Length: 249
Ligand code: SF4
Ligand code: SF4
Ligand code: FES
Image (cartoon, rainbow, N blue to C red):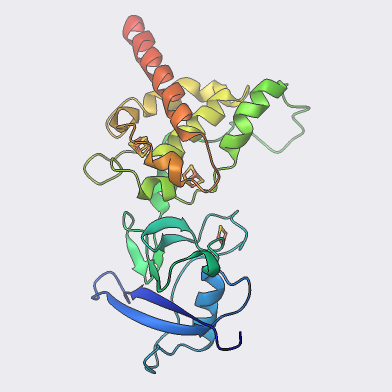
């Protein structure tokens, strides 16, 4: 058991302007290892499998329990969370690459701020003003809570955007995560104050009509968020909003 090894091939790129190179690492296996613990082992001894000293791999992670959403990367070609990817369940050599749809920072780290800009564009928040005591919140019936709770589990990992054929620079598509958050905040009794503004934000270029309904997003989501039903519901609401705005004009 002590001799058991794991092999990782990691795509390295010192900066967006540097060429990408692949480095191979051979590590001692331990029970329960995941991709992040393997990258941490490399940081403790950054030497490639053929004995060349190198630098520790740059990557994002925080919670190590699939909650913060920061450790998304492509593992054996699939977008997923590195902290919950157990090495024993992966084919070797394990290939690690950064997400491909976001600007590279370095190695496995990318800049996913586009998601946060998209969430700002649709006002994905509950508008409450001030820090004074607002009293008890409005009632949300259990049936509504059951719809909203899964949507609230989004960890902003961007895996759904990485696999979406429509999420690219040409379409400017906001992606499934943002649309699901529109449904969540529109469903909230206080959040619904901004419902019309959110729907209008999704009515233009890069909005919900860019979705081709390929459903890659729902398959890859690590939190099993019902993205396709959210997209259908919000799409219907956007069409109704457009009709209302037309009749008002
Ligand atoms: S259904 Fe397809 S096109 Fe629409 S957001 Fe999901 S992956 Fe993208
Ligand atoms: S919807 Fe799912 S895949 Fe997309 S960002 Fe949220 S948790 Fe990640
Ligand atoms: S480290 Fe937080 S989701 Fe993986």
